[in-house]
Length: 212
Image (cartoon, rainbow, N blue to C red; front, top):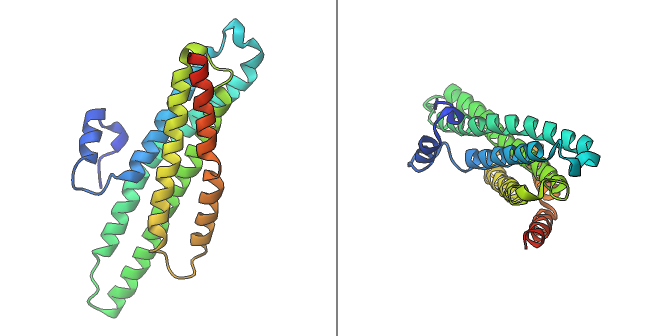
């Protein structure tokens, strides 16, 4: 098992990503990007709440900030969970296949690990898409001096969602034939990503117009 990735220094985490070890990989990076996006949303809420200009939006800001904190914590956990899920797949693949009983056991372990390795990035996709929703809601009401931070949050959340979707898709081919998770995952990917790029472009366009 790896050390908890989110307890590493930033430079150490980046160095871990840069090695030939496939875990942590893109799934963990996507989850971390989503967590960073959520943190930025929380920051802008904190910089906006309590200001006279934002008085009419206090309830909305409170809601956005609370949801962002919960999603940040979830995505931090998913950063580690993704690496652990892949390690479980690798461990299952390495099990002995000498006897029929060993082959049955290996296939069962590998099947369970593959399902988990698909579900984890699917959870990341959901969370990242929800963080993007928060950034989109915050953009028109957040502190204008921090509008670029909202833009970065939107970009990171969008990237995290796309990255997580890629990690779901690559695992679908390894699911057992007929596993309903494959169709469910494809449908959710399509739903979560539909219009996301257009919405991200719209958020950025509005922010850039405000910056001048």
